[in-house]
Image (cartoon, rainbow, N blue to C red):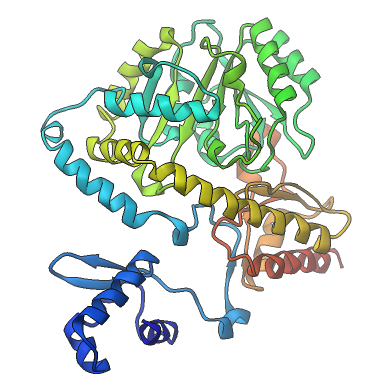
Length: 438
């Protein structure tokens, strides 16, 4: 196996290339077929290669070698899960089993709200996140963004029309609002959270249908509300008849055992809870869920049916098997340790390398954080400057509603960045900021 890894490192094979057959390697290395099979199996377990039945083995991907580290691109702009720690093999088993288990269901249309067996399993799983609800209130969606996009258009029981949203927030939700020309009120979120007095003023004086919030590891700031802040926000929503859409897309990664979602403080339906599996499993699965109040279930189901009839049965079935088998729990425990370590490294390197007139938010999960650049510096200028240094960062300008736009913020994610590269990349960011100030 060592010789094969050396060949991969040397660039002899490229991602997607078919690897030599078991028999040819056996002849090359003068060893038994079983030895080669064992080596390939070990490489497959480590997700370096994958097998295609009746075809052979293929290279999944390879990191660049240490010797070329100085030429490597350090990508802080990509925010997907770390592909090297995704459960490809485990999930493949679940997909194969789902094909057998749900082969009849694949020949007919399913329930718009999702497979009942998966919804039951999700209700059990949510209890670990302090979300206690009936499976009847759970809707399976094609990624949590689908749920959010449907909810912005639905009439709510309070009869109100405006949306209150954190500023900044992720691109897709901004698009859902602006593409429909909906009325929206922004509230700034910083390293200190939001101004709760201003939030009350907005709730009191405006016709707010719902407040959209990412309660943990907010995108792009990385901010997480304290339990006390969550309680106060829920009380304000109750007082002024405002719904809350709580996007807890990465709640699984929270290492604080006593951290509760807002849903825990009002499970009656005032808080609509959404969750995605994109950041902790495989984004290509496009699976998410929403816990809805009973009074919205009928309208949401009709809107879901109009959008895509139902979420694919096969991916739903595979997720159910993955959850019920205990694989998900083991996977999450590993990810928590991994991203916690990345976040710790990131925050320390911020302190070590950013100039004093730049500030940062978040970083706890290793997924998202944001840097506020010195006054007068444009994010797009720094983005272009850093590209020349092989460092990629995200200009956060388009993560604001047009009337709240700020142009001196960049977003970083270290989810796909090797630990050893984080200090190197942040040091270059700090140097880049200083370069543009001269």
